[in-house]
Image (cartoon, rainbow, N blue to C red; front, side, top):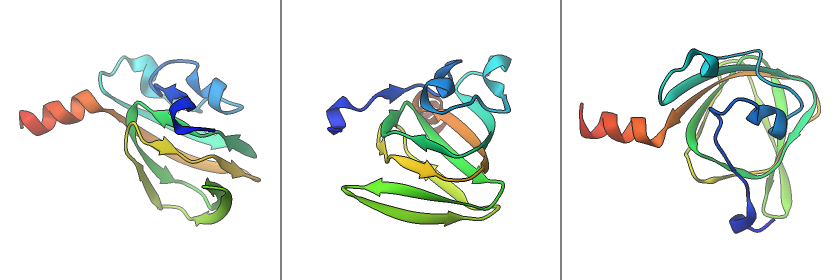
Length: 123
């Protein structure tokens, strides 16, 4: 898919995970009404995530051991994750298509660009 055609996803909107994956997070702070920062705990069975842009910065903390294949260009690359591994994904950059053939458990922190800029400009 061309980068200009990739969907832009706001991870703080309720129901967005059901559009991206087969299930919603086990728990999420979205219902708490926090502004600019959110947490979600995921425990997924085998799944595939299509290319997309996320509106927030995403920090992922792995809770279990699993493997994910990421599509980089026209090739698939296997990555292995262990408990405690951390992934950082900047906002508004394309996230590669990913597929996982077994369960994966992780916690994600989403931070809006607005909150980050406000905290940098007004410490």
